[in-house]
Length: 415
Image 1 (cartoon, rainbow, N blue to C red):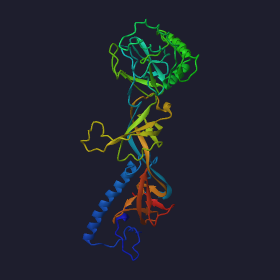
Image 2: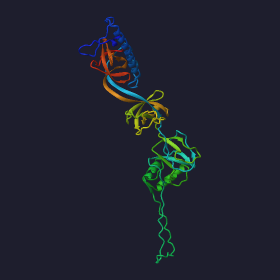
Image 3: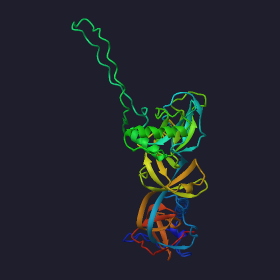
Image 4: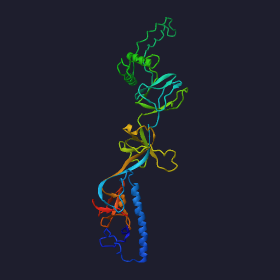
């Protein structure tokens, strides 16, 4: 190590290489010069130690796993070409996402509620209102009217008039016409409902946009299975539509309370991870980008960025008073849900790829030495010191460049 801090004899070409001082051959120096050199050596030792610590901790670069065992002091390593990948780790939270209120349109008293965490699918009862089931069906169009066949009667004729326009006729009123035949109700909501009814096994009608007498008969059979009066009509509050299977959350009321807007919340059934990423450093969050989710027990799980919020907000509980940068929510999906085990919620880590440097010269970070004249260098196998510019730090390695560096060059780990 002592050769690192030897003053260079200036030569004409100003080359970057230095010859190390040989033990016992250095000419005597003036006391003042020796004191200056000793102080410089001590300062440089601190820098070398700091560089080594940075390399071992992964600071200034990726936070991925480093080498299995760092090179020993005095060992020789080879300058090699490889691709360095900077990995950064941040915190996230596993869960099912934010709960959404169920659009329950039934009116009355809540008489039964499911347990939080219950999974519901098409045909399941979500809750009971006035002891009537509210059933889940699949679709994107909300329930906005009663469904059933319609029966209409034509408008009665206007009262007759006598010849004298100012005197009402005294003729007896005409007999009202009989009611018209039932008319099918039409609409996309009918098609959506009939698709669900057929999927539940109640058929005997054509799945289309018309609610016909055949649909009515199938509805009566369905109502019988639910223990409801067989009216053949679907009330506004009898069903709730969702895009698929859902997971029911905590109820906003207790049995015996009136139905309200937040009577029951729900989420999807797929677990996901949400990261509140700094809006200033969210360039990694690109839809489709792959990340690694670290579970609390250390198990790594593959994930993918599914969506990135468009509105930045102050960190939770901060209110913007601390000056911390705003964050945007980044949602990460995990395709292999079984890899998450039985864990349903909790803190996790998310590791993503930052910068990448391909086909660059690299050495272990521990090989760097701090030169007395500034900057970094490497000690060659024959004891010379060559300057090295540093680039990306990642996984215990560092990108280096310089006119005297090449792949295959042997360098020492400083003692």
